[in-house]
Every structure is written in C-alpha cells, then in structure tokens.
Length: 297
Image (cartoon, rainbow, N blue to C red; front, side, top):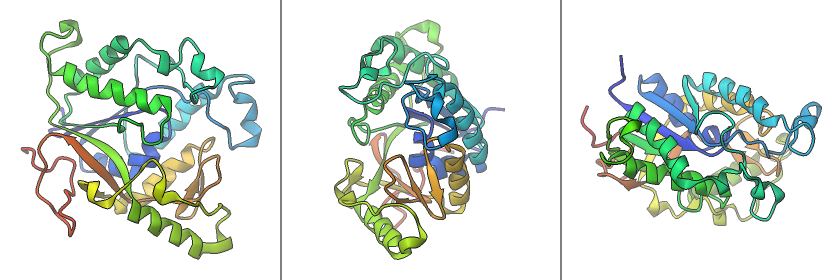
C-alpha cells in the first residue's frame, strides 16, 4: 500500500542527508510517511577519519565509495528509512571534489554530468515515487560544493520536468510536486550551538568554530519558513551519524567532520519553502512546523 504522504530528499553524498535532515527523516518515517532518499554520488573523494580504513581513499585503493554505500545503508536503518536510491544507479556519478582539484576534472564527476541525462534520472524517480514534498539544496549547495550545486540544479529541474506531460513519456506519467524546501540553519541556532560547545569545554575534543554565524549555510532567522521539531529523534540522528564513521566523529550532543570543528546535533531542523503554498504558522516566528502543512490529507 502506497503511503498517502510521500517525501523525496535529493542529497549529494552519503552523510549529507543525516547531517542536514536526519531527524526530520526519522520523524516522518516513524509517522508512516513514505520517505525516499536519492543520493547523487558515492562520496569517493571524502577524507577518511578511521585510520585503519585510510587505504580506501581515492588516491590509494579508491574503494571508499563502495564502503560508503554500506555506511549509508546502516545510517538509514537507524533513521527507519528503507527506500534508498542513487541517481542513475550506484556509481553512475562520481564525487566531484572541490573546484580546482583533479577530482573535479574526472570524466564521471557529477559536476561534469550531462544535465539532461541526470535530470531524466531524477524525473523517473519523482514520477515513480510521486512525492508531495521534495527537499534539496539552495542554489549555492549550502556551502559551494560542486556536487551540492549540481544536486540543486538536477532536483529543481526535475521537479519542473516531472510535471510536464510531454517530457519523456517513457519516464512514467507526469507528477506535480506540491512543495519544495531548501534546508538551512538559522544564525541564532548556530550561535546557541557554539555557546553550548564552549560551555562543554575540554569535555568535548572538538575545536571551537569561529565565525559560524557567517558560514555560507547560515541564514538570517527571518528567512526561515519552517521548523520541524524532530527532537524525539535526535538519538536516531546521532546513531545515523555514527554509522557514517569514515566522515563524522560524534561525541555526546556534538559532532565534527574532518575539519574537527564542533557543531551541535540538531533535533529541530529548519527549511526555506521555495515552491508551493505556505501552511499556517505554528510558532512564535509564524513558521510552519510540518513540511506537509497546508496540503490535503
């Protein structure tokens, strides 16, 4: 039986989904919403935080991507998400690394993908899953990573193309997505997290970040349209982060990536509505509290 409410999240690499939207995914999965994750690459260029796995790196055995498939499966099990897909199939597109690196010139790099082809892959998923809500990145990909930017382009174009009955009829019947969101972090939330990390002091081994409020993924509080309270699932999110062990270190309520800069694990996750009608405000800031707010059923 197909769930009446369906959510599709388009992310660039394994672990992106957990960091930015993990608690939300766990909450909706527990509520019986159909949650589908579409990941665009295997994250082959990631830095490895587990010393005994260092030889999996791109400049050595180049086996990290395959290992991260298993990490992603474990993470999604922790979140209760069973529908996990890769754009074009696992390994179709490669992690592009950052602009100016050799990885960015790789012929299979997602950044260099034929956009029409990549969009067609995504349209096929949209038309099969038929989500009312799609979540993906903002035009800068949150912090400028080429794969995040490309994921944004693919997802946004796929949402439009999926509703076009004349677009590749072999991809299935047309479907119109009702709402599209971009994840974000309010500056006030980043500030509160930094204060909590400072208060923890030497009990947490991570470095104190500076200038987090000016980070590319930070937005002014008044730009946030939606706050999903999934604090009951913070533990699920923490477990999913631990499953991404090559990329994320977790210590209590905090985590860090390869830069060793500590951040708080957030149970309430924030979004900007960029397509569709805004539902009724439900908090002191007049924000929605549900990605499906205002939709029938």
